[in-house]
Length: 272
Image 1: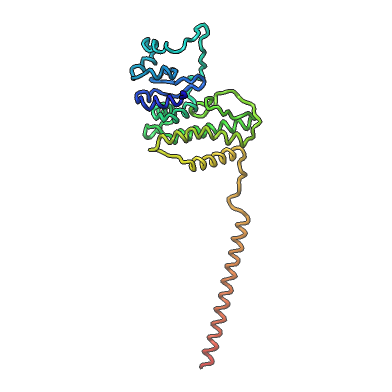
Image 2: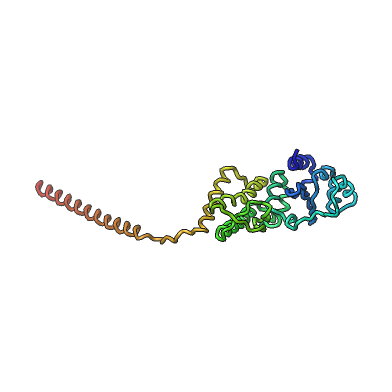
């Protein structure tokens, strides 16, 4: 069984771990745990040895007891210590995707509270999260098109608000391809939103509709339509024609009435 499926199984069978799992570091296949500002990676083998919450906290606080358990892992050559990039410590769209896949509502809550709190209720607002990520994604793809570089497809190169922090990539992809692929960043949150069914739920039709709306927004920014006068001269001309036609109709009706009056008057005179 691969690491992802093992994590899902472990997560479902151990409720205590749910508020600590933040995602998976796909470069090492390690699980990211976090609590009270402490963040650490742990192998799936070592994680499966954790059977209670005390052990999790011990691991996060570098407790000696848990270190002894972790020593059961394959030995690492300490002469060549593993270098962990600062980028791995940054929460990314890939983390949101993984937390959604393993259905970690607690993990999503922990991330979304950083930028998606409803000021009125003080609660997490997933719609606000979607709006923020959509805006940032639009900014990123428009910039990539205007400055002629590629839109990065790696979710690990975007923070959880959709801002890119990776290297600039060259490309021969068309603008339309960039726009279409950029929607995947927003879809990460549309999928995550279904963990918040009390707020919103997106069907496949909803997602397709939002994709079309998104593409239209980006193209409108890139190629804004010319301002159209509020009152068209053609419309004015039609109004003038309609008004003239109205006066002509009234004039004709008046003539008809006058003719009938004359006819009736003649009939009355003949009877007298």
